[in-house]
Length: 104
Image 1 (cartoon, rainbow, N blue to C red):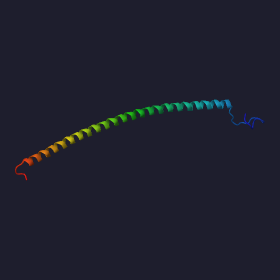
Image 2: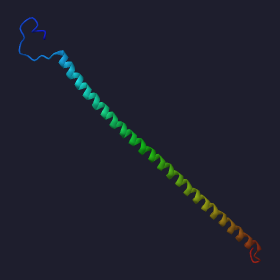
Image 3: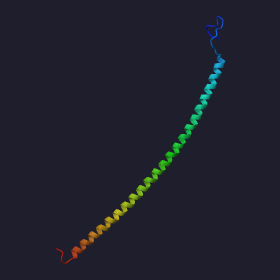
């Protein structure tokens, strides 16, 4: 009963029983709790999917880095081989010029 109507006769304003209000509030809170659980489950699914994508991306990045390293190693080896060939050719030219009778 409301405070104002306790001493006099009840007026026509809306009053709710505490038990009914508490029951309705509990039901509302249960619904909100369920919504939170549902959202949490959905969020965890998205986190798991993002984690899987991140791992896949990291794996791909690692593979790309390995391929880059292999290609640069091949390029270094080819350049080293060419350097050695050119140096050998220069050495041969020097030998020819040293043994050439008309060279100064």
